[in-house]
Length: 494
Image (cartoon, rainbow, N blue to C red):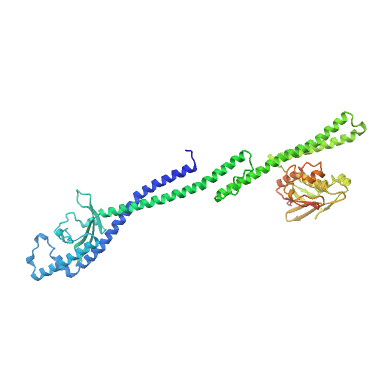
């Protein structure tokens, strides 16, 4: 069997069962046995303590005085008839007490002298028994002990005692005896119940474990199946959708779904990217080839060749521009756009950039309205890269502004930031395209129809440069109303 979660859980369950039985066997049995022994001993201790306290009074002094010497030397002739009658009455009463006590605690009860003679017992036949193994020191600080019945038998005896004191002297003991056979039976009965309870709990645990394993393994199998589908390129696989897993698995499934959607979007983007770049490169190449062929075969007369050669030159410059843009973006993908930040005057950069559009502005009859809060604004950044950002934004605005329109360029400040705004009143950007205009080679249908010269890379480059400067850029646009791009720069530290 492979090293799986299920296998590990099964092994862990078996180990837990074995350890549970071992722990119960080693610890629970001793605990139960000690508890039963202490309970039984305490029950008998309370009974014998009542008798011993009663026999410690002066009413029983005469009875115990006759046992100051050995039983064999004792003679009834030393006592008067009245004393013998009184002793007989006391002894009969004590005998009844011992028998009643023995019956209540289901044990043998005796009164024993300090040297081991059983002078009175709940079993009359044992009255003269001499306990040769009796040793009060064997009890230690306890009031009970367990000893073998004899050397040849396996039976043990639980002995409980309480001293009888008269005149501050111990004259004997009230002792209760009982074999431990029933205690062993009670211990085994409780242990059997413990084992049964343990296995019932273990069985319920197995049921819960099976349910948990199902809950753990099923999501893993489904997520694994989804991963295999994604590896095959099937990013539309919906096997993880509308599932109700545990929180951790649900988060993983959601991440997998999100990843698949993003990869699918990237796949679609890649296909669109290839289609766009093929189109944008094929169009100028087709024009260049067509015009060159026409010149070579004489279709275009010599007096008109200069005009068409200029068109070829413009198309070549367009291809060069697109190639340079692709190289720039590819470099930013691999190593990131490299910027060399310096402090420079933003006003000078904007004015020089505006000057490069004079010819286009005159041709399209478009004017710039430039406002600023200061004649000199020092910012920190890469001069050439920021100039490229401004150029691309102005170029976009010119392409989509109507003839005779105005483009507003505004600079404002807030705290340590300078806000640069480029606003036109052109065709605007559709709402659904606002988040896609930063994608490479993306063109809205309107822009493709009105502007055949754009590469679709300008705004992508702008976004990359602004992000490399750790600045922000945003766009506000309403279709058929106009578009405004706003980006930030950080002021130079004086």
